[in-house]
Image (cartoon, rainbow, N blue to C red; front, side):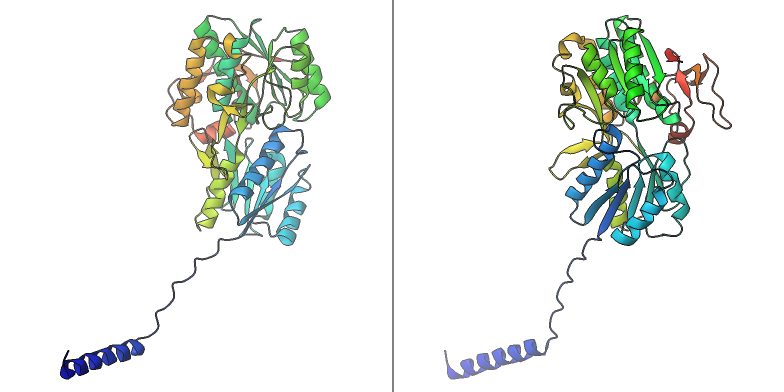
Amino acid sequence: MNKKFSLMLALLLLVAVVAAACQPAATPAPAPAAAEEITLAIEHFSIIQGTTWSGAHDRAGKRIAEKYANVDYIQREEVGPDLSVPYAEEMISANGADIVVGNAEFMGMPLKEIADKYPNVDFVSIVASDLSTKSNFLRVFPRQYQALYLEGLIAGALTQTGNIGIVSAFPSVQVIRRQAGFVLGVQDAAEMLGKEINIYVKYAGDWYLPQEEREIAATLVDQYKVDVLTQQTDSGSPLDVATEKGIWFVGKDMDIVGFYGWSSTDTVAVSFDTRWEVLYDHIIQARMAGQARPTVLYLGMESTMTLADGTVAATVDIMNDGKVGLDAISPKALPLIPQAILDQVQQRREQMMKGEWDPFTAHALVSNGTGLALEGTPIPAAGTVVKAAGETPTAEWLLGQFNFDLQGTTVLE
């Protein structure tokens, strides 16, 4: 390399270094914004331990906190309507609660009155029949009737006496709607198998009355010869009676064998499991994204959430001893159920998971003449076809106006 060329190369390098030094320093990429810290507060109307309803809500809160590092879960038990507002305000001021849930309508509705006072807090109430909302007063419920329909198919196949009993809380839209899903499943099984099946309902008067529930369950077994028992109440008393009497039990709200260890699959033919966390997840994700929250959320088997451990959980599903789908049917019960019913359970479950079929759309809803008269909505006369087969009822009608027992249901005094 000659001296002249070396000098030119050195000058070029010097110019490059000077030019680089004169450039402004690169602006560092902004650090990702920290996820909003969220405190989810659930007010449980009952005790948690030993109940399926509040137990499922408590599990939901814990699962949400497990999935999201920025979400904390706090709770209060045995919250009546007179305490829902004081507890909510305490959790907002002391714990920074961002979402406050009343897990029953009667004690969740008072939260509506303080929604304007706390515009940055999302208040949530379960729907029983009232559907009033505000932009930050949200209403939620799962389409449990879908899983109840599948339970009805199984119960209808298992009964040998042709008598099935329901220990129930009290006439309400929520209770009547859930029972109707079960009844349609039983009736479809009866038609498929050429059976005649009686469905008896007796009310205890409230959700959690262990002694009254026990007495009703015993009456249904001893006097009405039911050999499959289920409930729309919250204590374990009906299950205790089924275990003692040696008959089949169909559970509700939670996998009572897998999560609570209540009884065993020798008695529990199947349960349905409610994953309230799927509904809460919708609210939390919308909040974190800065989006408006849905004021009415009515999700079914087509909606899912991926839990912290990777499990994909539908809003509701049949479940027993930790297993779902056909595997949820008790190993002892499975050989007693005809293949045609098993095929129907599998097909309908898959269709509902895809959002392609719904029992309340497929079936006609015919009144039995009993139920609960609502303001402006009397009980339809017996035999009235309130909704024709193939018509899709609105969520508002299902949640707020389904006030009649289905034809074929016997409500005992």
